Structures are given as C-alpha cells and as structure tokens.
Length: 215
Image (cartoon, rainbow, N blue to C red):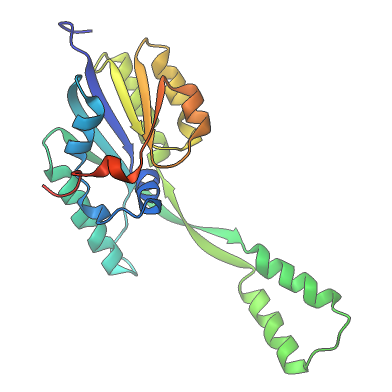
C-alpha cells in the first residue's frame, strides 16, 4: 500500500452489467455515469481508475445498434479521464436449434396423417432452422481477468470492484485475493459463485442508481 492509501480500481463486465441493469428496468442505460458509480462504490477509498470491457458491435447489418453503442461508449469514456474502454469482438457462431430438431423428430414419428402441403412446410421449416447463428462476445473474457490480476501484481491498487455476475471470473477473483488485495463484486444479478469467492458481494437494486445518470 502506497502512502497509507487504499486505492480502488473498478472493472466493468459491460455486457453482463448492462443486462443486469436492464432487468431492473433502468433507463436510459446509455447514459449511466460510471464515474459516479465508481466513486459511490469506492466510498472513502481513493478511486484511481475504471475500465469498461465490451464486445464491439461492427457497423455491419444493424447500423443503428452499432451507432448506439458507439455513442454510449463515448459517453462512458467522457465522464472522467480515469475511465477507459477496452473492446473485444462479437462473432457469429453456428448453434443447434433444439426446437427445430425436436420438430423434425416429431414429424418423423407422427402417427396422425397431416395434409401433405402442411407436412412438407413443417419439414422445410425444421430443416431451415436446425442450425442457426448466434452472436458470441470474444476477448472480453480474457482481457478483464488478465488486467485484474496483472494490475494487482503490479501493485496498482489495493481494492478491486468487479461489476459482473459471471462465474467465469471466479479464478481471477481468487488470484487477486491471493496477492492480499480485496475484491468486492457488485451486480444487479445473482452471482452465487462470485459471492462465495470475493470479500463482499454488493447486490445492486434500482434505488441504488439514483443520481447515476447523465453528466
């Protein structure tokens, strides 16, 4: 600890935190002020920085979604010079559609005779949607935990605040605590495994966010 200060650094799992806030009905999420959030979490500690991690929405296909994200990230970074944004990737991955697979099985074993046209249309629908595409966030799940651990080992903070409920981050939390740093996890979602791994889990409810929007 430098000069007796308890320096606090905030790590935000952007996608996970966003969806937790959305479930609370908070609006407008693109105007969440992470400088205010960070200061409120840090309390008497010295807030030294916040890093916001999220997969980048490329300007392909849904241009509105990309523009909205860009505006939101500019707002987040502009709230305070101590806030940085780190971008991961969003990639398309094939995924089995279990509903379509079940429909194919049902049609194959059907004992009741259906109209031929209806039967063929249902078969075509099942075949078309057996494999679909899902968007997967990549990079963030590596960047965030690595930054948490490396920053701790470099002595850049004494207390970490992790804004996420993702159990995949449990190993990073444990690694940071092994360096004699404290880790507080804050989320609007239930994060049982993270709650068990960290020093303190802070459940966030809608009233907590009063005054946390805008500049």
